[in-house]
Each structure stands twice: as structure tokens, then as C-alpha cells.
Length: 408
Image (cartoon, rainbow, N blue to C red; front, side, top):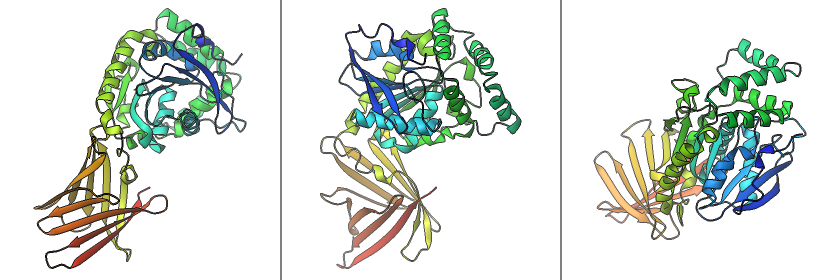
């Protein structure tokens, strides 16, 4: 009963490389690959669905690149978890097992509905692996749901009420659907394990999707009229997330209007590939700096906060230090794709210095005031040490040490 019924017709498709099993953290995950080359494209389906709902996208994009689809745990053909654990974080763990098994160094990740929450959870933990993010009609932060409404949702998905509740819910969000979409979606829902659907649905009441902002590269939310002007839309929870309306569809735009959906996705991919020169050798050398940090001196005194963000599709890093006292300083790191080395421009007040990455060391800044050598040392998880040495015109070397700890 519980299988991905939507793969019909793919077996004869000349671009399909075939299905395989990948061992996830709680059981086997069903995975399918098609095409080859290009920046890989990985699709994650929604709740009550399976990998086959991406059929039109597989046919379109596997002509030019590797396309991967998978069934989330307990859905489609993938094994249900023995301990009953569902949720975006668990799905992200399985997704990581898949991309590791397929040896994908960097890829574009696309998630629909609940699958968008899985994608957001993956972006929060593995932003360095991503070339781009696309969310397809995804809700945002639902943790503020009143307790009585949360309890009502749990009650409505109880075994005795499950089928009536899910059918009524899906009929509502299928109101604008093409008839082929309606048949398709309801058949997949009927083939879904009730415990999996319930576990995935209720997990969203405690999930914070803002972690998707950990990925600083290109990201897009394609949303339907169901989420138009809705404070619960994902782009209201993730700063910097570009949002674009796909009109005239149900909650499944990739099924209702596949040509329109594929056109927007293709445009997004072209933009990602235009910045692909920033994903080559050396492009991830500074990824360990990303995030928000508290900075203290060796004696433990708080000096300020440090924020490091990736910009320009990974071609640049912007570093801001906000001290407890004194002027803010800013550093801008830029990658030379031809050499794989970084240059740096540092400014504080009226002082500006510039330099380039030294062989075997961090950026070396050379200016009228002497030579600056900056080294970053990775400590245990969530900790860094920054050492700056300045050799002045008097021949004396002055040393500054920062101990940095990632903010929770």
C-alpha cells in the first residue's frame, strides 16, 4: 500500500539512471537519479506525497544536469522510523545521508510545503554544501500557534478522525487545482501512512525555519495565493529570502503549471551558475568564519561581537566587528576565481588597509603603517582564535589575540 505511486512512466524514460536505497539515520531512504552534469538539483516533496510528484521537473531538468529525488522517511517507499521520530530536523539528517552517499559536493535544493521545512533545517546545519535554495509554497514559523489550536490539530489527526480531516484539508487547498493534480495528490495522500503524516504535520508546530538564513547564497520562495499577504508565509520568517507569486494554482504549482514553474526554476539556476565561478577551488576556505560570534580577549573581557556573512553568491565575505567601545570595523574578502585566493580590504574609521591571502596563512595586509598578518585558528566546535600581528616602522611587532565563541 505504502509506495511511491507517482513514478509510473519513469522506468521507460531514457534519462533515468535508476533507483537505489540509501541508509538514513532511522532506516532506508528511496532515492532516484536522472541525467548527469551541471550543478545537481535535489527535490524534496511535501507531506502526504512522494518523489514522483516531481516527474515534470525531472523530465525537464535531467536533460542538462543530474537530478535527484527522494522519499522522506515513512513516506513513499522509504522506511518508517522504528522510534516514530518525524520532523524537519530528522528529514534533514536523512537528506544529508543521501547527498553524502551520492558524493554531491554542492547542489541546489528545492523543497515543497513540509519538504521546504526539511530544506530549511538542512540549510541551517549544512549551508556550506549548498549552491542555491528554492522553497515551493512553504509556511513559516508556526510556533506561535495558540495551545488550544495546537491541541485541536492533534485531536483532528487522531486515528478515528484522520481520514476525514486530511481529505477535507486537502480538498480545501486543492480548490484551484487542475483535475490531474487533484487525482494525483489525493491518490498519494491515500497511500500515505497516517502515523507519518501526523508526525510530519505536528512537528511543524515546534520548528523554527529561520535557520534557512544560515545559507547566504541565492534563495527564492515561489508561493501561491494561499500564502499571499499571509504573515505565516516562509519569506516572513527568513530575512533576505526573495519571494515570487505563482498565480492561478493550488498548493502544488509544480503539478498545476509545470511549464511556468520550470521556467522560473530554470531562470534561478542560470543565476546560480553565473556565480558558479565562486564555488571552485578556494571558495570554501573561509566558510568556518560564517556566523555570529562573541569576542573576548585572553583575560576573558568581552570586546564586542563579530558578524561574518557570505555575499555575491559566495564570491565575497562581509565581516563586521562591533566593539563594546570604539568605532566599528569592517572587512571585505573577495575571491579571485582564477587563483582560488582571497583578497581583503579592512576599514576602521579613517584607516584602510588591503592585502591578499598568503600561502600557508591567512590574509596578509600591507599598508603604510607596516605589515599586518592575520591568522585564524579553528579550535573546538564553535570556537575560533584570531591573531593579528603588526610590524611597525620601528621594527617592533605588536600582537592582538581574540577568542571567539559562536553565539547560540
